[in-house]
Length: 152
Image (cartoon, rainbow, N blue to C red; front, side, top):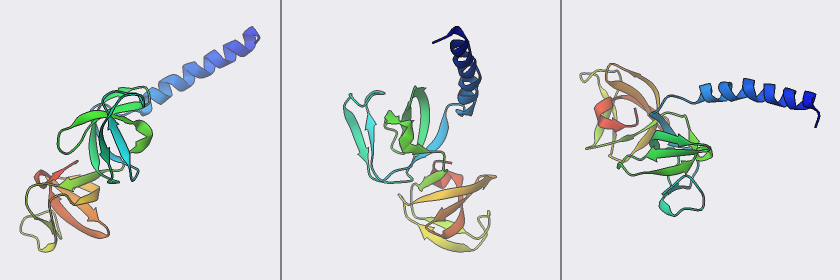
């Protein structure tokens, strides 16, 4: 390799490296599992033991740390472990917690109830404001209070 080729490669890395780092969101941030099956591990490597196996696409997780292509996540139960970044999406999702919760027509507790969601129901979030989020559960959309979901 000539010194000219080396300089071009070095310059490319200098430009791409900072840009790639800027695309990573500030920690912690919300993500969701993007595949039907994903494994949480004790450490950031495929060679360490599996703590948990998730079979729930779109389950919200909180990313609390990064190590190369691995993300340390926290699940809705508070369990923490490492997952390959390729198994995660920035799609905003939430899981209903507590009791059966109303999904309302508008972001107000006096607004008519459109649907009711049981604890454990997962939906996609499209908007959040003033303590309310628009939650879409398989096409059924409504406003839900943020203290009734995890993942907002």
